[in-house]
Length: 348
Length: 243
Picture 1 (spheres, rainbow over the protein chains, first blue to last red):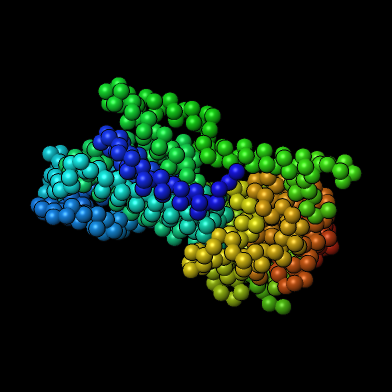
Picture 2 (picture 1 turned 90 degrees about the vertical axis):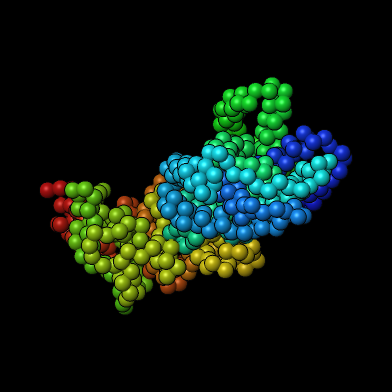
């Protein structure tokens, strides 16, 4: 059973749009805002970490850049409608992408584990800057943003819908990537970058593009988050745990898939928030994170969705094989293509 | 006939080892040239330098009359110089068809077009047919046998309509039937105008297919000429068997 992607997307958007209309409580809407936030960031991370196979640990740095950018733009401003920061999100995205471009050009000369280390170093550089550039960021005393003048009864709703819009945008970009030669190029880079380079794939351009788009989106998410919080500190705006969370969510749901990161974010973020509400303990979820990571690597190394997809494919193939094994003179129970694959008989 | 590839005084040093030591050789257009030599004689290093994967420490590489020393492999590929690898390198997570499409040498604008469009299919169809991969074109490349991977890699580098193809041990680890298939494909493509430079250890394959043969020893060519003359050349015998 596979619904066409357009239909699945439509159902998903409808669900996200109508969900707040059923009269949810504030704490639950707040939770949903965070689920959407992580779903968007995981989807964005997936463009680089999933498709291109470059496990960036620096994304939270760009989240912080977005947060501080919006804080700087609206420093000392009084908002009238409250929608002004949302209208400036494209600017924040552009700032993130423009900073990301040279960072990618340099860091993407390295790969895999070294790339992860280089990018997490970037995260700490940004954090240190946020702590020390008092004039810009207010240092460890934090920076304040204008308080959103939304009515208390529906305070979360604008943030919810803006996060939802960012998620739809990111998933749209992911879908377009998967359907275009950009995605094909990224996958070839993940599989064997040197070979890809040697068959004319524009490796540097494509991976730097993916990185810039990815961190641009992450910066926009950071800006919305900062506005939502209305007060930001360096240790929360640039938090390695945010990086860990989005990587883990993408791994859990399935790297290089459209829905995997979203699924991972829904499971992990709602789980974490609910646990925090119930236990009151703030950092206990970290232990769960660690355990979960071990379980994923052990049981579902490719994530939930790819594993399910594999099973379905195997079953489909078996069924097709069963049906083609019938009358024609009791031939081999393998389909023609399967036997060709097994015996390498392409040229006989 | 003119020289399509000319290598002049090429040198590559790894630590204290002169892997390629002032090698000069040329490949004439329209030939199937073999590059043979004992293990460690610098064949693959030479390949890597010519195709832009390694930087030379000295010397020149000329392709089609232009100096291409130190060019980016992708650029060389788009100019018509393709290669395959010793260990068939394909993209396992892509389908057979996608493996061909991704090697199409696309420009920036085409990147934002459909992943596998109608024109890509048309372009790949003839190759799939020629290499008898049509039936399995939607299979993931990871599901292919090793021999088929070699065929696929070969087919893929033909997507860019190359003028010179460098094959690194096309028959290594492949069953005899597939070796014949490979030989047939090379002959057909050669007849259609592609020049080949082949590194190979299977001597009967080389003797059947290639002319001329270049023998490399200790990073230098020690012989270049007809295959029939190779077997009796004292220098070559010395290089392979020791004196």
